[in-house]
Length: 155
Image (cartoon, rainbow, N blue to C red; front, side, top):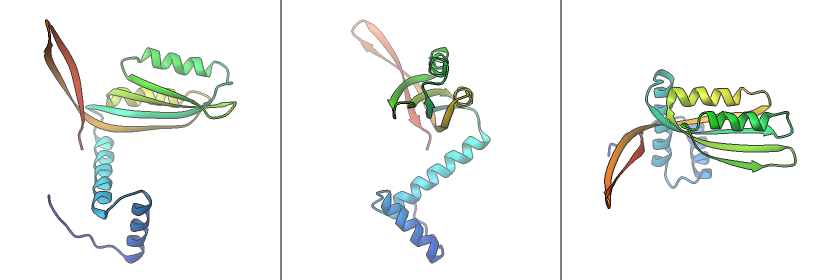
């Protein structure tokens, strides 16, 4: 493990320390590591639209809006190869929150998410992408060869 020293003005240091503690970090090093990971991911995703990712897509909508729930559901069915799972939460009598877990190429996941978020009536749409490495594995189960995929974060 490498060590380095960071210099910052006192006000910035106090703000960082306060937020790190509030978020539950036991030490500054882990908070800094998470910031560096996020910085690397954002930088990589800004210039590289290639590769695979796992992502969460969250959005809120009013389920009374004409055909919106059906349109969103149809979008997920049309892209069943990208949508791994979803969770639907009834926030109140009108509003629903959905969280979808997506996996695929960064380009395809972004395209799908943008289509969902852009639908008239979708509010607070947000996509969070984590770049991954995808590996194929095979092993024997009795007389059958079982193939599956492993996904590991790149950072």
